Length: 605
Image 1 (cartoon, rainbow, N blue to C red):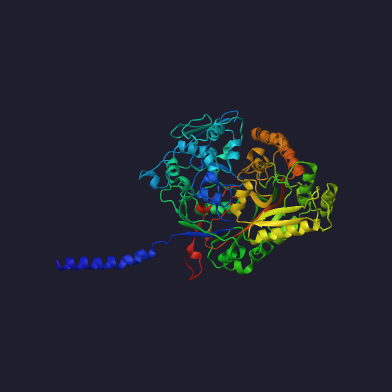
Image 2: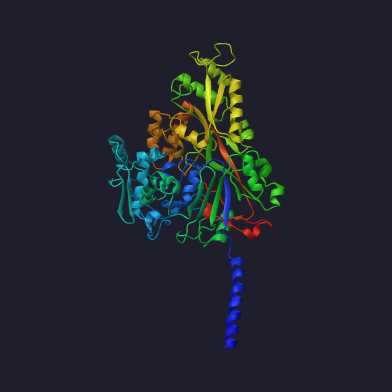
């Protein structure tokens, strides 16, 4: 017995000694850290349209389909759907099966019961865009899809000043059974399937969650995706953590056979469970210097869109600087499917209107803008002069096009102003309106360094034309809200493509989307007719010809000055593995890994 007691005591001692060792060897959480240059506006998919909020939402919510992260050209695959969508021959009826066994992240709204994702969740989520109470900035885009009965349901709520009737079934949006969705559209929509791959907007939201949190739903995003919100200090700091209820999703992809980078990423990660990181921390750092320093000092793992001041320092002549390369830092330079433009409010007393004199003013301003200088001074060379409203990598984009959008011709600008009566009438050295009142451009802007430089170039260009300019500075979300409400005269802002169809870029000219995408409040029946035809035509020569007609009208009326197509440089710390910049989608955090063994000695999380 004494011998047995000794053995037992020795075993206890061994266990006690082993416990700290085991604790020490437990893997530390993998944390991905980087910064946004602009603050988020909301976590509610029905209420967002800005890039930064739409980068957060698809990591929490899931649409029916997704883009293959590695495939180039892009390819759509099922995400929560069980197979690809089935359409009728006329592309008006679409049917989708939801995969059983997918669950929302746990939340008090579910009262301790696991909540399965069902077809009705997508019906409810889409109806939320039509609910007037949500003031969705993308309702006008969704309305264009033409779900039978949805616009009427919205009108009923507006006319009767009653709450939106979510329980009323409509023909265009139905759950045929627990796992079967059916969409019926008023007209043919050959590319409707692409709409179902936008997790940033069309991820499923549970009705119980919305009803529990009410006006606070912005701060309580609950989805079926790989992450959940753990911390939010509005416009300052955001933490997403691994969703413990996330189903088994394994890394896979279909890179092209000759895509060496994609094939290497696939070989390394194929079969790994997603997400590969445990936590994502996002800091809002609007100024470029502290944002860049946070990366150089190792506090951030990714420098997403390196600022204009530091691009030449980070990647001179397109190669990683030797001092950074020595540390193992990686650099990636890509052309984005995005543009930066100046919007003219078509309802504004100064720059708006459709009469020849108003059109001449906008075209003169456009011709007087030295975009090449702006690209070098404000963007660090990270852009190309834009020639059209359509974006790179989208249908209808012509890389060989040369148009008035890309012209810098101050002499012609002055001639237009003179011809239409914008001359100095009182001898003060500044041009006046044709009626003799002062001509003053009111440009909205933000406090960041890049906007300041953009404004410097613009003011210099306008001064050369004899036009006075005033800049009204506010926070970006405030300017966005004001622009949608038609309260800004002019604003320099960017747009990105959310999918491969070029028509999405033309939404900002469609009168039905005033208050949403159409922040210029442009209204032209001839353009609307072209837009409607583009919706129903299948891809082919006839549709491409219509794109060209649309482009001509965008130049002729100039509600937007399309300035540049953006080039971006991303820098990665050596311990970030598997990064590949998405083309049209924003979700990528769950596809990267953090390899702490690559960190320098003495530097840890």
